[in-house]
Amino acid sequence: MTTRPAAIARALTATVATTALVLATAACTTSEPPVAPATKTGLPAVTAAPTQALTPYYTQKLEWKKCGSLECAGLRVPLDHAAPDPSKDLTIKVARVKARDQSKRLGSLLVNPGGPGASGIDYVRGGAQTIGGPEVRRYYDLVGFDPRGVASSDPIDCLDDRALDRFLSTDPTPDDATEEQALLTQAKAMAAGCQADAPDLVKHVSTADAARDMDILRAALGDSQLNYLGKSYGTFLGSTYADLFPQRVGRVVLDGVVPPDLTSAELGAGQARGFQIATQAYLEDCVTESTCPLGSTPEEARKGLEEFFAQVDRNPLPTGDPSAPRLTEGWARLGVAVALYDQGAWGFLTDALKEAQSGSGQTLMALADSYANRRPGGGYDGNLMESIFAVNCLDRPDSPDLPAYETYAKDFAAKAPTWGATLAWGALPCGVWPVKSAVGPHTVKAAGSDPIVVVGTTRDPATIYEWSVRLRDQLDNAVLVSFDGDGHTAYGRSNTCVDSAIDAYYVQGRVPKDGLKC
Image: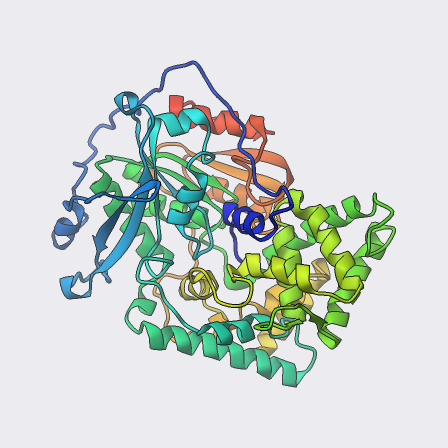
């Protein structure tokens, strides 16, 4: 599963206009004046480059132009930071909303919404009035960017729309050798397509590559230190940056953590447990209504959901969409999963399941479309469902052997019966990925950094709470803020305890108490 926060809510809102699924941001304000970070002793000049060969990139000036409600620019970065070649440079697309009070501006706040593969530009465009509290937006330029290979920044396009439909609709929980081979065929198609489309770039879309791009962006923005909000996969990017450039860490918040030391199997097992916990919370809520379509008790409802997936596997439902006429198990699982990202969607999920019981998969297909950034009737906005593999499979390779996934499925299902097999087999493209990275999973410390704020949600489906604890413990200088709640990520999701603490950190520089519980 992808690890995306606000992008999910935005897609759901666009898809289901009659439901109120927008993630609200608490209007937390303060009368205290902003406090700029203290000048750090011995910090190199803003444009100081790690190597002489990178100096032209670090000294470039951004040329901002109006692009709708935003200002946009292009950032030049090397394909390979270790061996820059101007003839192979990439252009990272950047957008900003300027601080409302330029006279007291604290600098830029870079944001990344997750994925990997979600557009930071779309995130800023859609969240210009909701990212952070009013005081954060008053004193910071909000800056979003599309990482290399993503959306508008030299996007990798691995499969055409029909091929991507086939990839996503394939049975994600194979029951026999024939279905395993069908899934393997789709995994190989994704891997081969990415390599064929971008044979050079596919070797250089790791999170470490994106983090190095982010430091060039910091310099181009004129900030001596990076102020950053990373959600979901954005925490992986942010903690990787902190480990590479600890002296450049400013006010950094990592919300809904993906630790860089997770192996592919650990990522799948953790997400399976996370979605199981979220499913349990949803089912406990569902059965409080007499009309819950899955059963009258949480256990009965869980078995009812699993039987529903099995029934759709045997007999797909009509969708009313000529480009994807059948709701397969693959589509159905995406439709259910997207609604687990935010508890505000639970009621709509219940209605979709009721409709499915009556023989129509139309609404569940609409939910699946929102998960995949797929337009009703076919076609995709962006390349999220392709770039996620291009990045993840470089960061976390997996086994090429099918028996390994059979073992994963059995092991994951022991703790996550509804989602274990799905998350186990979901990593198969990374087992056949055509290029390898020299880095792989690794711990991060960010020794010598300023304090980093880590945020975890106890019933987060995509990034389990334990991962936030794990990263806080790894980092040399970090504090943990815990939100006891449902849904994916915490900051900006109507919890004033979390929002007030993070807003005060960004605006006044007050580091929350380690262990703060909200």
